[in-house]
Image 1 (tube, rainbow, N blue to C red):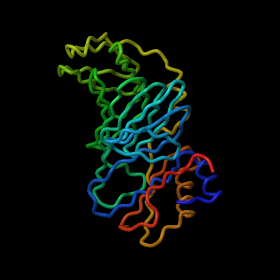
Image 2 (image 1 turned 180 degrees about the horizontal axis):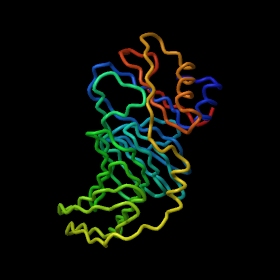
Image 3 (image 1 turned 90 degrees about the horizontal axis):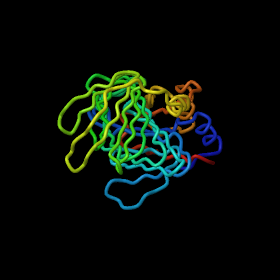
Image 4 (image 1 turned 120 degrees about the vertical axis):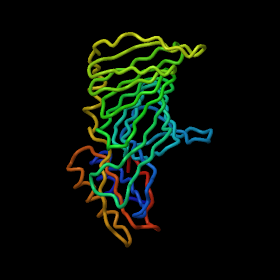
Length: 283
């Protein structure tokens, strides 16, 4: 898809209005979730499940289930999920998107978040997230070798070092439940953090007691740089050819001038003229 200069300028001006065009039929019960790449600093790459090569990650790309992301030294990338979350993959971090689906239950409606199922795995490094209050029936889970973290409308910072087995789980806002490999459940509440060590040979996890979490300036910067509600949806009812200029104008209006990822959903179109474009960061 070719964009004219005006369109490219508008895409950059409104940040992550990356125009994730979600074409679907009205009666589709399940659809893939989407992830918009909102910012890239330094070196960040992605790999599709089943492939051997890594490709450069670029602002405006649309990712889905089955993608792994890694960042280099001094690098980071920001992501926004249609299931209602934002995340920053910090330097020297490896994360995979294991599951990302949505239950639509009929024709979508603007600003109504669907029931989502999101599962990520942190193999190494540091992941910062803010997950919006989830729709009833939704699941947002982060896997680590040291345990699985279930999130329900929470700010979360996870670090894991596979060399030492050490990890930290910090909760600036909300609360999370950590399920350890032996089945034990640990709740970490707002303003607290736990640290621990995972021993792969035995599968044992040794934890500290929760303690007050120190303020993380990098996390505050992450929130200041991003929206706080994940991707919003804008429904455009159309049965004919799609006017991209009109779609961009509608997305700008929906964003209200904010740095807001917008998913443009056009129901009832089985053969669209435009399909999931990945917009370039530069003209």
